[in-house]
Image 1 (cartoon, rainbow, N blue to C red):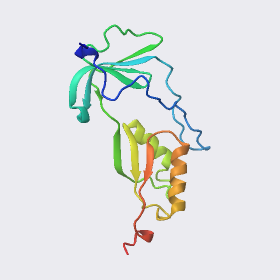
Image 2: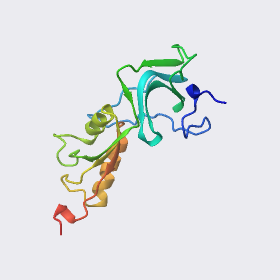
Image 3: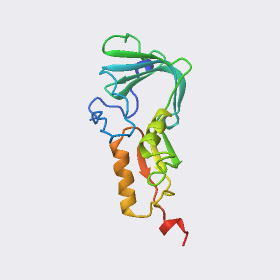
Image 4: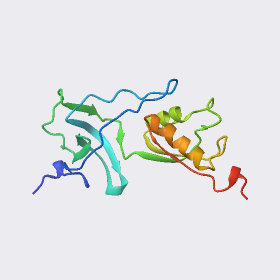
Amino acid sequence: PESPCRRPWPGSSPHRRREAFRAPLCPPGRARAKDPPAVTDAIVFRDVRAIDPAHGLDERCDVVVERGLITAVGPAAAQGLEPGSRVRVIDGRGRWLLPALVDQHVHLREPGHEYKEDIASGLAAAAAGGYAHVCAMPNTNPVNDTRAVTELMIARGAECSGARLHPIVAITRGLEGK
């Protein structure tokens, strides 16, 4: 029988394809993401509080990520993996490891009020806070009530790395409620 300390993570498979990391080029004056991390075969989060409500997990343990997939979770899941050129070990004491978050109510202000916040800076800030997806409200100038504005926001979000943008569209013209 398989040791509970090296149990595979539900849904993980060494055969699952993974999209390569590509940092999109941002236009001049826009925020640019940090360079991708160095290539490693494994990342080990040692003694981290792992929380995943979908799998009923809330415990202090080791989490092993190999080639972008969680392969082992448990008190001694990282046993035998030592730091080196191909294994990165992160001390997880005092830290939490949880699924990416979704913010369903953000105000990015672009288009129209870029001086307050633009899409690039908003997505970078969201990613820094642990959010993988943000849903932007339609109260922009012009209001996001047409396909053209929505497509502009999606294109701007795709230009810069960070959280993924999901524009919310107004259900009435100009947010008038009629």
